[in-house]
Image (tube, rainbow over all chains, first blue to last red; front, side):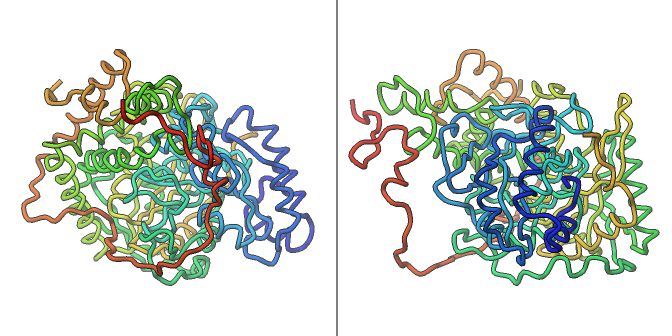
Amino acid sequence: MHTLTIAGLRRKLAAREVTPVEVIENLAARISAVDPQIQGYLAVSVEKAIEEAKNVNLDLPLGGIPIAIKDVIAVEGEQNTCGSKILQPYRSPYSATVIQKLRAAGAIPFGRCNLDEFAMGSSTENSAYQKTRNPWDLSRIPGGSSGGSAAVVAADEAFAALGSDTGGSIRQPAALCGCVGLKPTYGRVSRFGLTAFASSLDQIGPFSKTVEDSALILNAISGLDAHDSTSVNLPVPDFTADLGKDIKGMKLGLPKEYFIDGIDPQVLAAVRAAVDHYASLGAEIIDVSLPYTEHAVGVYYIIATAEASANLARFDGVRYGHRAQGGHNLLEHYLKTRAEGFGPEVKRRIILGTYVLSSGYHDAYYLHAQKVRTLIRRDFTDAFEKVDAIICPTSPTPAFKIGEKSNDPLAMYLADIFTIATNLAGLPGISLPCGFADVDGKKLPIGLQLLGKSFDESNLLRLAHAYEQSTDWHKARPEW
Amino acid sequence: MSQPDFDVRHIANLARIALTDDEAATFQAQIGQVLDHVAKMRTVDVTGIEPTAHAFPVFNIFREDVPRDWFTPAEALANAPHSANQLIVVTKVLD
């Protein structure tokens, strides 16, 4: 049962071939069997989920479907560690809007997925709790920061999961674990109840085994929310409506800046083959240029760290979370609490963010980066005058070894080179499986990335679905 | 390292994070490398370019100012590391 897609599980539930309680029990058994090796979950509340499953309405669009949740999205009564020691004692007093919406659609939030601390990282090695393994090769990272969400979907320990994407944290782990990962347009999905990392970049989105399943989840979680004033008041279409439609004549842009030296040759070959496949399906391939791409990583690590330094000021050991013992005055209390509670990557980013906002440096770094961000957005606006979507790799390499980049933050940051600009421009992006690299005798998944116009997820999903359904890559599963 | 202005101890103090000597040395070097990488971005000509603070700027989002049920005092205090008499106990502010 655990290998089913959401759509497949829905059919079995609707036909009463299986009950929602049996689904939870089956999944819990699968997690017990597999997760000691994968280590994708930080916590699983089986009894609570079974109680919820007993009362679920199977007529709803996601009735009875369990969905794993990245441990940075609040579910009332559950932990929300954000992968950090500073929130180890914390229990969420309310549920995020996406959780309320999932429940309203009949879904059951089930399991808390591991992540890089406060979603800062590209390998999930920055979790204060455990190192999640890539299901295709346990010596390798699953990507990050939503590495737990990606790994549990890939290892069939979840039918689908929610993650968050600030600079690629959904798409990159989806690529490295061989599943589908969708970052919606900024503003499409409410961020209320998502612990803020970089508020102008963060967006919640799904991980799934198929494009259709991502569309089903997006249907449930999208829409305006009075609790998030950056959520956008636009109609939410049925994102499954255009799946299966012809893509003949649709225009795909090939950005030369995303096909550069340093890309793994097997990744390059797989993505080029996917481009050819789109051409064979009738899509028109058009060369485009995004000239400011080379500055995206620099802009991102100024803006994201600046926003993080402000957002993470709230973790001060006063109202919730870890509080250090022995601080004799308030300054000592803060210094010790934050020194004990945060891990090295979070400290690095808060310090960098504080620096670029500090007196005398704000204009040279932060304001300048915001202006270059305008130029990066303009690149995409210009390109989208000519094309319906952009096609490129998700990650320049397949999954790397655990420990390979953990002492070199800059090398780790450059792993996000193809995903970051999307967040700076607020655009939707999707990663889907497009092949495998042979590395040291192991098969490692390769991800294809499609980037769309603002609020044009329907066409993005239509394009992704057309590729997926005419290839077999998404059917390959790691042996577990 | 080409970032002589960056003093990790001063900035960490502004960010209210105590550093060990090892952390200070490591972060000084690592953040210096990141700033070196960022230096190229700082050379981009941005004359006449407006800054982007949000991908989709929205302004003046209002909602009705009406009271509604939210946390009870017990719920609001449930996560406090130290509380008494329905109040959060904090470290001494004034010496």
